[in-house]
Length: 427
Image 1 (tube, rainbow, N blue to C red):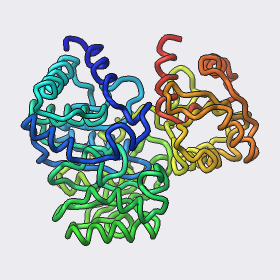
Image 2 (cartoon, rainbow, N blue to C red):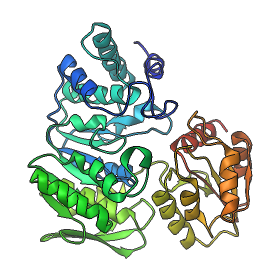
Image 3 (cartoon, helix red, strand yellow):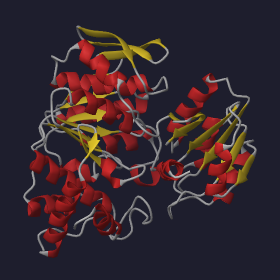
């Protein structure tokens, strides 16, 4: 492979559960053995030094971003996240920056040739990029690692890691057809990333989820650090937090990510990092956090201050978006352009926008997994929304022509938000 376009063509030839193949079809349900076999065949290591392994229903991406900027103060830090907004390059970053295309070409060529030579089984899109991450860890000699699970925990491809600090964000309902229909079942799967004798750091959880996390940590004989028991991250002002962990207190942390809930993600990331690097200075922590930028998370669009982008895609994240929007009363009208995946709970998700969106413009995301707009309109109208279907590009143009007294919110899917961002680059 000589260009990133070659890499993309190779990746697009693989089974991709994220966009077009129902999970459970093709190569059966999630399993770890193909990844383990590929790791062996490539001679890669799953003993990643200073590794934070993040699972949860909401907040994984934000938590990974907080952890990355903090660990990068002392380490060459390699981060693995998913899905991406614009380019697969976003999924593997070194110290918060995309890797050069040359690294992608070399790594993916090595993976392709290993499979062609019979040294590795056929992998999915997600598994292949995860193997590329492990290849990069070896080639770059990175000294700290931030790894976000793709789905669940126990059987996620990333769960081949040998030793890590497990970081659990808020556990809520999503992917119930795979992970289970109760918080106990979902928490059991996600807490499957807790490794024997390692550390686990968790945000405050619903009692049902917390009981399962405590049980999983107990079976693994893992040290469990819990928000509101072992550490706190409290509100001190608009997007300003105070943090406390044992005798360590850090005041006046300016958090650029909007939403009161971000204090939980900041707190759990900071606790996990300080357990590894306790000598980080307060001022450098403040500066690192204040400089964080995370696209697509309640992001105001440059040059269009009345447009907001958010990748909320399940009931819990829609609820958080609704809380933020209710506090922003400067607009006379608010329009939400959204698309959702057909395996999501549309009614429960849309309920989070009740009372904050005057109109819903419903479109189709650029992926076969997208729900049909007519079905979403029906669900929206049943719970009282003024809703209509609309073509994506028509909606994009109309959003740009909203008066500054009106707000446009693009939400519901990584794929829709990413598509809008790409379109905006050429508008």
